[in-house]
Length: 164
Ligand SMILES: [Zn+2]
Image (cartoon, rainbow, N blue to C red; front, side, top):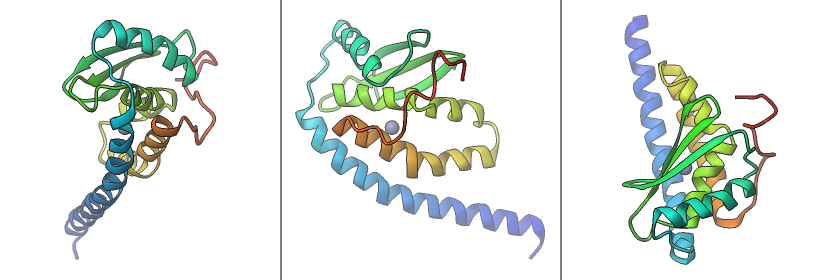
């Protein structure tokens, strides 16, 4: 097989495998996540979100020199805006507008997951590595933390020690 064809074949195979994994892990995440979303306290407005953010960012171990802003929006996600600055969006719709979702996204910030996504988004293998890490490590860890409060590694990986 020509190298170019082989690379295309390899990428297609890897992508298919990732989709299969996403379906399996996604199912586990949805089951655990949904179960917890049902009981987690709801966030009705921006004011409530900000007061919870003050408490929960400390619980996640995020240092004071890291800026984290949070908003209510269409879906929950976290992203790095620039050095030491992150933005979290929490889905405003029931049942996902809750503390569980906020804790989940804060874990992504504290764990340095947003930094990885930010740094490697422009290369295929960078994105591929991120997708694998995301599915097998980051997402399950964030789901476990948001549902139980258990941190599977020492956090934070971002903070006043000069990293990230
Ligand atoms: Zn997540």
